[in-house]
Length: 50
Figure (cartoon, rainbow, N blue to C red):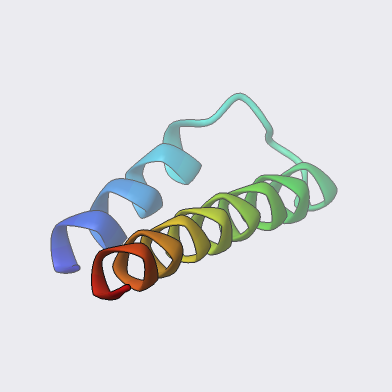
């Protein structure tokens, strides 16, 4: 998890968006991607249990 957080921070730091609005959009998209990944992981676990 620590490696992921560092990677996310570095990606944001090195991203092409240099505005606050651009950074907000990048964070929003990153959060949505993480949420989608967690949802898929939960579904996979649920399918493995059943």
